[in-house]
Image (cartoon, rainbow, N blue to C red):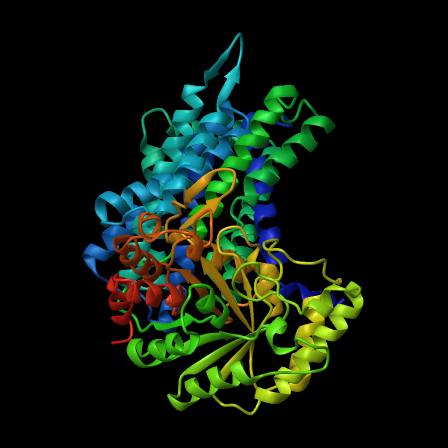
Length: 623
């Protein structure tokens, strides 16, 4: 039992799931109590009144503790903000309970959870100067769509249940105002003192409800109609509400609040599941319309709101600082330099001495190093590494069968004639030779094992199962001092799989590509796409410290044919200097700290062919 308890309190995901389940149960109980399905109904006004009256307990407790800890801060303006916050939070509950009284719990909760972030954004937009980024705007669309869809009711045709929708959105607006003001109160007075004044607001709201015309009689008459079951439902609701809120706050003490809040969308899914279960068991207790198209309507609405909440939580990231320290590097392929008709040695020397790069990615091509089985020629790679070493340029060395530049996979002719299993074994022998040869060279800062090993791209043979794991294991056994880089495609790659395998993760970043079916394609992805994808990846691999870099920032044309098969004007039409500059600015906005540009050979090719603008613009990154 002790082991289970220890496991539970260390597993924040279980805690968050249970917390949202309790909150959903609280909403269902509220609906049952307000509808009077199993007892005489509790009036929504009375429900709101006693919810606010609970603030008196907090006030009393706070005053007792203040005797010893003296945490209360008496600032008139700050106190007023806190009191107003509490009033709005309780008055926000009033229409919420009225909506639950009138409509189905699944509809109310979906619209409530979906509209709250919208109102929060609007308040911050107009009063605090905050703006929506692209991901948040997309979340806004999902939330609005889900909220409207869930309140469409079918009679002869679909119509919107305007009164219930109005009550629910009014509740969301009131609570959103209360939460924004609460945030300001906590900022100005601290949590404990701020919560004291908010609780005063709770009590003030209850007093206002009590004195509201026609409500006093309802509240005082509660003893005449509130049966024991009604009271039991009320206190059960509050118990589950407190438990749910407490568990979620406890989870926040274990991990990032951003990660915990990403599960907020679970609440309406739990409400929907509980509503379905209770409706099938006791249709008289909770009258939910859960057949045919209406059921699908609610499911789709819940999914839309869930996606919106997910985006809105993960979309809350600061704008990248364009002036932050950034490591810039390039990839150099002697093979590609030859294909461009250049002298690879002159090309590399120009990159090292004229561009003055201090980080470079070099490539070990298996088909060049081991042209004959068990006969290794490292002369060209030795020369490249030695030239970088003379200038103390740090190197990422790419090793494996799948390495940069089309057709992606490079193997000697003799290796094409053997079975997959034999080829994998020979490849490991070749990798072992590389590691042993260069592991004592201090300018090599990491090994990149294969290039985008999980991305189906290039002319590559079938690989053995778990080939990448076995290669990583081999490299680590021969060199424990260096990290291993694993890469994946930026736009379509499933990053968690690659990021989990390596010590460092590298993504590509292509903004303009060519497809044989659709021609030239511009990816109109905002910089936030990469920030969001990084956050999601870190969530899935549960590692928030792993280094992420951009290993290929595309800075050359991608056309139907290879560059060396295309005229200069066609190349410039595909990738001009303005797009080059824009690509650099785009990359800075994605928030990474290390970028390796793809196209240094092409810049030199353009320079010797009368177009030095790319070379000169790239030079600014290092000078």
